[in-house]
Image 1 (cartoon, rainbow, N blue to C red):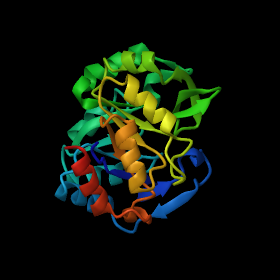
Image 2 (image 1 turned 30 degrees about the horizontal axis):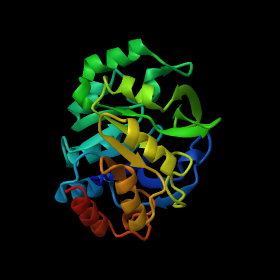
Image 3 (image 1 turned 60 degrees about the horizontal axis):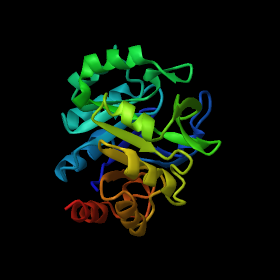
Image 4 (image 1 turned 45 degrees about the horizontal axis):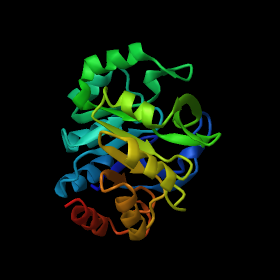
Length: 253
């Protein structure tokens, strides 16, 4: 279990928001706004050699901030938010180790195989991360797009995890129903990923304590990496960043 740090960007600032409140034309519920620039976080992660962290652009107006973070640690961070086959190479060229994609590969609630293949042709499988962030509906985890507001017909299950693993090097999965609330993880989702994912997975959502980290390490069969947002002291929470780095370093050995 490796710790994958994050730099979430909204209106050009590093923020932590409650994921389910993102919507066009309205300000989301915000847990934290940093006065430090994106590059400060990238340099910190670089110092601690935390590879595979992600820079997420939450809406428009974040391109310059994302480039700043990537420039501070070339090929050390992934980038997501508004990535398409048309601009993926641009972001890889800007210093992203991988690009993270969700909404682009869906049309009318379905996976668009033409778009997915076009994307892979641009990036290569080893430089593409698919974001399968999901919310529960009718007892199943459905991938959500458009800043987590639109339910697709794609269910996160054994079949979809197996199918999509052929196109990417890892999955990023936010448990959107618990994201940013610091009320505990989605243990059912974690167990599903641990049982059925055949490539690396990064889980985010609701991690609030070292007990949660230990629980994730066990429930995830020691093969699911973790990202922490609002609970981390870097973002106004109570979990000490350096202690989390050390805990996950020991857990991954």
